[in-house]
Structures are given as C-alpha cells and as structure tokens.
Length: 458
Image (cartoon, rainbow, N blue to C red):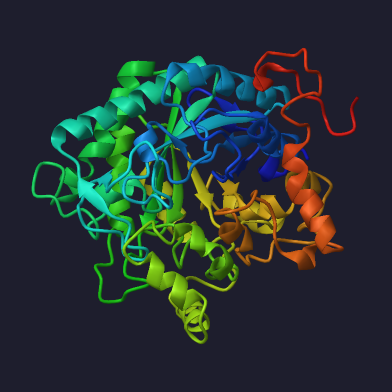
C-alpha cells in the first residue's frame, strides 16, 4: 500500500502508529463485575489488532468504581488491575498495533446503578440527565480534587502496563463534558460559569497526569466539538460550539496533550452520535434500565406502546445528523486542525477507503477512528489493503448493536448482513473463543496469563 495516505505511518510526539485508522472506543460487558479484566476482553481487542488497525482506543475504562457506566467493564482503579492491561498491551503489540487506554468517568451518565456506590452519581451538577432522568449531585471541590488524582493514577498504571498512551474521554456527556458544557454545568464556584472555569477540571487532570507520568508518554483528549445539547429538546441550551471547543483544546495543548479526537453530542446516545437513528431494538432491552432514573419507567412504557415508540424514533432521527453519517464530524475536525499544532483524529461512521483517503489528503484530519463499521467487519482494514473501497456487506448504521449491549454480548445484530440468524449469533459469540479456561483442571493461574491461541490452533 505504498503511497496510500491511509497506510502512511502517523507520528505523534512519543509514539508512531503504522496507519491512519484507529478502532474507536467501543466494547461490551465482557469483564468481571469487580472491574477486573478477563479473557473475553482480550479476545475482543485482538479481533481488531489482527484486522489491521493501527491503534486501538479501548472502551470506556473507569478510573474509579463510582465512574462506571455499566457493570462488567474493566477498570484501571487499582494497582492489581495492571497485570491484565499489561497482558492486553503485549498481545496487541504482537500484531504491530498500538494500545491507548481510554481513562473515563461517567459522572451522572450511569446506565445502571452501582451496587458498591448507590445513590445519585457524582457530577458537576445536581440536575438529572435529560432523557433517562439519571440522578446526580454536584461534587464538592475536595471531591473534584480526588477525581483529578484518580485520573493521574490511572495514567500511571497505564504506563506501567506498557500501553502506548491514554485518551481522556471528554466527549459524549460523560464527566468531562458535564464540566465543560454550558448546557449542563450550572456551578457558581471556580469550576462553573465562564468557559475558562468550566475547562478548569480538564486542565487540572492533564496537568496532574503530566506530573505523574512525565513528558514522554502519549496523552490525547476526546471532545464533543459541537454538543447539539438541544437536539432532542429544542427549548434547551444548545451547549458548547466548535469555537468553544477549539479554545478548550488550545488550552489543553498548552497543558501537554499530544492529540485531539473529535466527536459530537452532549450525551450518549445522542441524535448526532452515533448517527443512524435510535436503536430499533431498544424497546426489547430497555427494561434493564427501568429503575436507573426518574424517567426510565415511563420511557419503557412509551417504548413498548404504539404509536409512541415510532414517533420517538422519528423525532430522534429528524433532530440528528445526515442519514449517512460517514464523515459528519469532518467540518469540526478541519476547524480544529487549523487551530492547533497537534494531530487530529476524527470519528463518525467511516467505512469507505476513498472517503477516508480524501479526508486525510484534503487536510481535514490526520486519522480516523471507527467503531460500528469495524463491528460489522473486523477485518475492514485488511479489505482496504486488498484494494476494496468498501466491505461487501457494510455497516448499515442500524444501531442495533448499541441497543443490544445493555443485555447481550457486543457485536453486529443486523441479521440482513449474515446468511442466517444462526450465522449472526455464531459471529457474535466468537469473542468467547478461546475460552477463559483451557479445560485443564490443574491450571490454577489466572486466565489472563495463559497464552492465547488463535482460532483454529490446537
């Protein structure tokens, strides 16, 4: 692929990635309830490392149990988690792929309440989230400083584990967004009000990480460049604009970030992110959230009674982005690229080589990140290497994967892409192959340290 900009190495300040395609942060409930990782997670990430992506940005990795969105997501909140992440980094590196651990905190945006930390979630605000009514309470300044420390320690652990860098999840409605957003942050202290004050939390985290890991470790920041916070409810504040976000990233560049990852939307899910509409299967899985927030019981009833669910889905799609979301965030990425010196990564439905190639050569972005189209085709990058412009069975942006993840293993749930329902389920379940235990009762070591075998090996 010599001469193809997609396969030109991307050089960050401290690490080089072999091509311009990243697996974006996405994952399912593959891990243990206590936040420890397991074999299924490694199998999951290896699908994409073997599929040819240059770098993997892990799914949402909480820096504390209070900051999880769902149970069964691996965390990085204590030193005993380091061996798991070290093993994952080693496996990913064996495929000439880079690993970036996404340090995260949910704030009020917790889809399921926590057994260990019940009650309203810690946030910038005491106002509940709009769609589900997820309850929150405004953190004290002392609590904010504690959370800053959690992120710094998470970065230290990521470095000790041999990861190539970390990404701070500052997008899509999670804790950083709750501080940054003019539509969410209603504080009256030094962490609220002006944009400079609302950015204080993010800046303190970046500075604390730099003090902890030094200057030679990659740190990038993901941001919802345009929030569209009034998409679902037009009477609401629209939130931060691209101009606001450009200024925030300029400040974070001064503080020491090495790249910016451009997304959109003030929550997740959001009419603009991911594009394609509200999950058509949400009515079948939403019952797991029925006690999660003030609005969830009535939402569940509405989702399961005609004509309310079709009307809701129509409104969601009407208030969202284009029907084909591929490249929808490129205008914001271009604005960011013109304003900062660090590399820019753009996410948003990418799955066509010519679109990606044009985005890079035209200077709109330095790289792209992909989530759903890689769920549909784990080896999409290999297809590009072979000269295909698009997968024979591309992602349909149906978002059934997004709905299913509340209950089921993450994967592509669009049956039309498979020869049969059984073939679809077989592909989804490949994340559990190889299994956690090799079948030898004499093996007492934790599953994560048992060498992996590829599918088909004995």
